[in-house]
Image 1 (cartoon, rainbow, N blue to C red):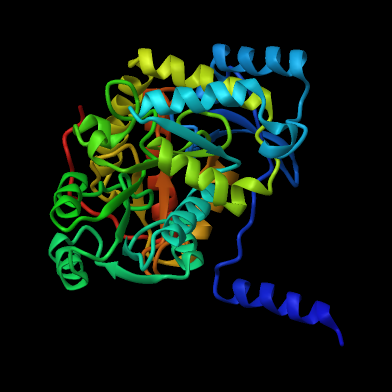
Image 2: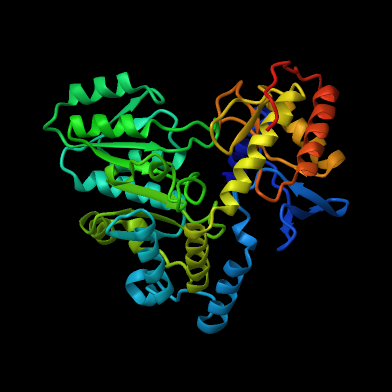
Length: 409
């Protein structure tokens, strides 16, 4: 049996469907973000990264870097074990307390990634609730979908942000049946916002528990950077808040925050928490420093929002098909998998701009796009250069322009 044939065939099918992913070998340079070194086949080249999830550049913030390096020098690199077996280091305990405070909850629990915190958190919660019905937004992230699947209980998918559909499903389930509504605050591909207040209203009306993914919002919104739920005054109405340390906080890891009872139950039953090595103390210290800084400082958020607004305006005024959003995410629609990949290849090779193409299954076929994420460090000159490069690529590939424009701010 030639097992390798199966694997080669699996890769070839992706290539035939124009879904094969090619990764750029990048070297971020602290103090020079968003500039990076691309180790291209022809040798090192300077590029500007336009699709980073380090939304505020906190991965290079001096206080964050200092916290990591000092802690690594003092405590070493690894955690040394699982949380149960020597891995519960003091910086990790401090981080969990900091996260609980950020979201105004009784307790926090840190996982190795935001993917794991969703996958493990949702599945564990639902398994612990007898006869639980999960109601999940149709556009929820893959990590949430996998968590719902692994729960092994009944699920219903409600149309994205469709509150009438959600209410119909809640009503059909009845008030007495335990229910868990799982949804996001910022949907990362379209850049739109979940209807948090309306979902909370329905949860209260039909006795459901709420679980929100604030991964793309923590650090970014609210007076202390706790997310959209904080910004809109709904944080105390949410039962479980999940987030990441790997995007706006510039580090690594995921977490949930909730009541002592919920957190302790997940801590005690979740295989994805129990049987994996804990986050290293240096990473925990860096994340804590980042959270503390962003609780007190709005400069990074203000700068990011200003540059995202300007980028949307400049690109739209250039006739590029920018999808309107109310968030920091700037989708530019291509709607063709092959041309989407070709566009990013041209941007990188001819203009020194790195943007990863977004194709199926991340988005539906026909909704291929460039997902641009301006940061406070993408200055006006870089935005103008991006617009000029995109226009040149659009012309070269024969991609359609739109004349719908918005006023620059």
